[in-house]
Length: 332
Image (cartoon, rainbow, N blue to C red; front, side):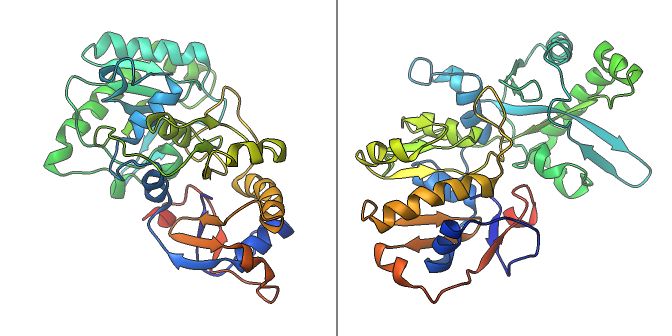
């Protein structure tokens, strides 16, 4: 559950259903690693694996079993606007639906022409771009959704290891600044996409055997990680399909889509919307004895719910709250 972080509950208007509240209150809680690391570990993947490679597996429909070389070496290269003044540079990510497919194609064509040493691709959404360069380089781990509206100073690495990354960002910015598609955006009084944010790099994908039977969830990173782990994936479960899925072993279910939607269409459901839906049938299955237990994973929080825990009627509180799944502090 992205955005479930340690700390006292906030009066933020988050609607939590009775089954989810029961699961949260009756779990035994402990501190654990950040959520993405915990998810990767359960899928048999290293915490420093390339997030971009995992997302590309799903977003670009790559098949590592047919061509492992084509499935590696990718970076997310998402279009953004960098707004500079005398004191700072602020990153502004385009809103959902703000980038058209034709616009994305024109801007990517400009990058292909000016930077032919790279392979440029567009994912299922027009604002999700990928690039693969002739030589790998370290990149930041956080994407535009986490940096939107922030000063880039704390997130723009200045060390020698990131020199190549800085060169590529600067070169792409010069290309996009002069692109005709951006002139057209400005003429329509839309914010130009004058830069790409290269992020999500890491080590090559190398899997261990996960102790899971299947993965479920709308999130792009989760879907790609399931593909890398060679596990069945589906975007959603229903009570009717839960028992059939559990017959094969443990399930990993993700709520929300902080890294973007894996499917062709976006959902308006939030993390808590998905969690409420899952909790309804998970709580019923636990009470009926069809589950051996449930692990509730948040960002730095792990709660374990056993069948016996459902009798802890006196418990009302849990050591966390739901916040912004893109909050940087929650992922530090």
